[in-house]
Image (tube, rainbow, N blue to C red):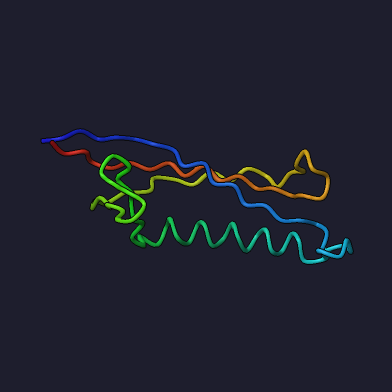
Length: 102
């Protein structure tokens, strides 16, 4: 037996509108959209994501749990400016669930 557990993963993607030399980064928005697409691909593809068991792990020998996490939806917020003026940020809220067994 078990119970359904729901959760939300808050994923932020960000990019600098300036290059390391201070020049304008003309590809900033394209880079940000690519990062958002990669996040959506990982969560929607069913790719295995390792879950670290923080209660049974040490730095030398991490313990991972086995399980299946199901994504129910991904909500995108619009691209917006960060408190740092040269940063653009996009936030994705990934709604997921899994079955906790006991």
